[in-house]
Image 1 (cartoon, rainbow, N blue to C red):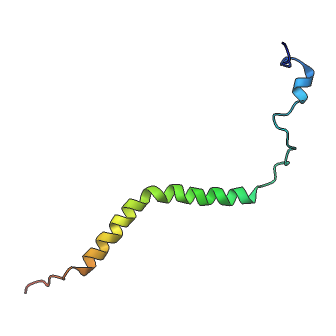
Image 2: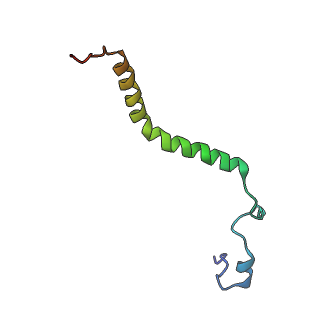
Length: 71
């Protein structure tokens, strides 16, 4: 059952790996925007615990009474 095209066959060089026509390399603005949004999420999500801890400690620190220096 040899239905495969041999790699040396000239017809195999004309075959494309996709059934859709080429887009001629124009920029895909929609996918670029989604990629940037996901990039921000991927970068900021691991930093969220650190940012949250800093924010909570700064809030708690602002509520503590201030110690006045003794003269």
